[in-house]
Length: 419
Image (cartoon, rainbow, N blue to C red; front, top):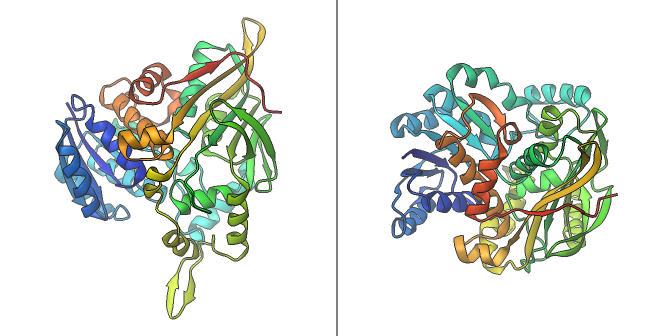
C-alpha cells in the first residue's frame, strides 16, 4: 500500500501511470500532476473504470519549487516519480528534500537555457576537465548525494531503458555471467516506421539535442570525443534486421565507467535512417536546433521550441507506428579465466504496445522501467539512502519485474561483436 505522485502526463508518463494502476496492491493511491490538468483528468477518468488505484489529479508547474512543495506537502506521497522534462530534475529534487520524500526520474539533468552564464561557466570547466561536451551529465544530481543520505531518502536516477534497463543489464552480466568485464557496447535500435517524413519518437528538444551533439565513448580511463555521427556501423538486429547505427554520447556511459572501473571501453550506438539524418542536418544548418532565443515579428522565440510545435507530438505516433525495437548490451570479458561474450536485450513490438497502453514502443520501453523502478523503492527491494543509478543495486528483482510487466529479456552467449 503506497501513495505516489507522478509529475508529467506525456507519452512516457501515460505508460508508467497505466502500469502503476495495473498493480493496485502496491500503487494503491496515485496523483497525476502536470501543467495541463485536463490531460491528467482524461487519463484518470479512463483508468478509474478498470483500476482499483485511487487516482487524483492536480495542476503544477514543475519549474516552480514553491508549487511543487505545496503540492507534495498537501498530498504526502511516499514517492515522487519525475516523468516530466530533464530540465526540471533539480527543482523537483529540491522539493523532495524539503518535503522529505523519495525521488526518481528517467533521464539525468540538463539545462533548458544553455546560454545561462552561470551554468556555462561550470559547463565549460567540466568539458575541459572531463573531456566530453554533451549538455547532460550526472554531476549536478550526484552533488545531491550527501543531502539525500543525511535525510535518509533515495533518489533513483534514470529509471528508463537507456539509461535504466541497460545499467541493470550491466549489473546482471557482472553478477551472473562474468568475473571481469572488458568492453560494453550498448545498442539501441528502433525498427519502427510511423509514416512521417520526419518526426521524433520522444520530446523533440531532448532528442534533437542528443543526436546533434558530438559523440563520445569511454576507453582506457578517459573520454574520447568525436564529431557528431562520424562513427557508423551496421548490425543485424534480432527480429528487426540489418540497420545503420551511429555512435552517440549517452549518460549511462558516465555512471557505468564510475561504478565499474575495470571496464576498458564503453560505447553507445543508436540506429537512424538516412531521411531522419538528412532532415536533422538541414534543420541544424539553418539554426532550427538552436536553444538561443531570437526576435521574430516583435516576439522572442526559441527556434527548437518552435520546431517542436511544428513536429508531430510523439504521444500521437502510437496508432501509426509499426515494427519493433531492439535494445541491449553486448559484453566481452572473462569467466573462470576464459574469454567470454554475452548479449542481453529486449525486443518490443510497436503495435502490441499500442494495443496494451495506447503508446508506441519508445514510450513503452521507458515507461515500464519507470514503473518497475518505483516498484523496487516502494517494496523496499532497493532501500539505500543517497543518489543512485540502477547498476548500483541488485538487478535480479528489477529484471524479474521487467519480465513480468512487458519487457522480457533475451540472451545470446555467442553474439556478433561490433567492430
